[in-house]
Amino acid sequence: KQEVTQIPAALSVPEGENLVLNCSFTDSAIYNLQWFRQDPGKGLTSLLLIQSSQREQTSGRLNASLDKSSGRSTLYIAASQPGDSATYLCAVFTSGTYKYIFGTGTRLKVLA
Amino acid sequence: DTGVSQDPRHKITKRGQNVTFRCDPISEHNRLYWYRQTLGQGPEFLTYFQNEAQLEKSRLLSDRFSAERPKGSFSTLEIQRTEQGDSAMYLCASSLSGVGTGELFFGEGSRLTVL
Image (tube, rainbow over all chains, first blue to last red):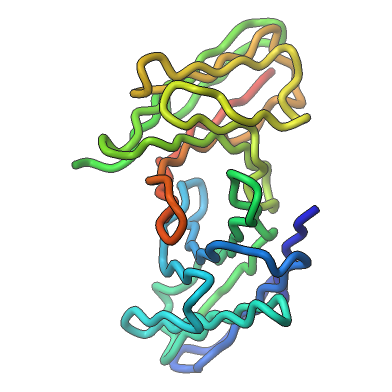
């Protein structure tokens, strides 16, 4: 059974810092891994999708990497801004299933 | 395309009442998902449709919960005889099927409060 863990659970950093959010999963037989952002009381916004054949994806200040063999993904945020404050969730789509399994998220606060 | 739409956004009901949520997915997406999220937790899978077929249901989905997707378009999630433990955000998401695709897009969610 796939389990997804995100560390740290919460993070507070000053504006301008580069930071790394971690996601680990127990079953390496995955099709995709997706990173999302969630603002309080809102739905999830897709940030990056990494397919199993890929090692990383980039969008603007965001870079996500995937190491299937070790069951890990990282989301790198460069030059953080107060507007980046949100909860970041990772989700994996495991082979032989039809669903994404989510971690519990990392709650990020970027201080001005 | 306006993305995934959910209605209502907020629902307050008394224990024992029935509630129904509607989801309109992105038009060309054949996969539709329902998730439930409580405060401080990640979304938990409830059920999944491919076109009009409901292919998987979580054990979280008790007999009081039912979901439909007639004609493979919009979907409804009904909760009968609501309990306070049903209070949560109900999220709908859609995607295209196929290996190598499958990016998931979410709606804004329907927040349920059971008094």
